[in-house]
Image (tube, rainbow, N blue to C red; front, side, top):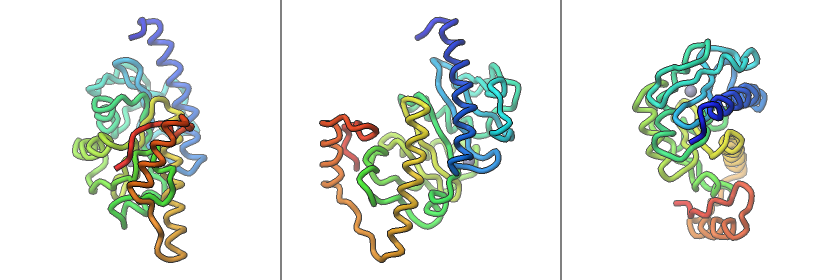
Length: 227
Ligand SMILES: [Zn+2]
């Protein structure tokens, strides 16, 4: 726990970071317009991008600050409709930040596949092949529950006909995982153009996870065998 002043300073930092990464969400093609949302946890508060405001127009004062149960305590804009998704993930995991995207490769895959298979060993950083959770309406408690079920074993979940959600210890890590997920979906789709894709086995992924743990290799330093 930080002191009250320390907490306000941390909230201010989170707001600036969310403005910067909100712009990256659009510039890196992970969402268009006002879609998607990002949040950072600061002690018992969540700083989260607001509803219906274009990312390029966002200012730190627009970023909403809410309690874990969805009570808005600061921010001049309206709370994102997906706040239950974010707060549920903070309740259920040790996440420091959450990124929710509508990235095209992942959305296309979500409509046709039950999971993103292990097309490349980097998927170990996400906890292994990433399941697609069944469609439920945006902003619903059921959507949050479905995502949390996957995030008990993974750091990313794909939401059918909707998008994806990733989490990390920091906003940088959560965002990198969102980019990795989109890249993996893109690579998988490319592979299908050549024929039947070879998918890495559980044993091969376990071996990658073990080696990554030994080397403490960037984003692959999780040390947890994927399933
Ligand atoms: Zn969404």
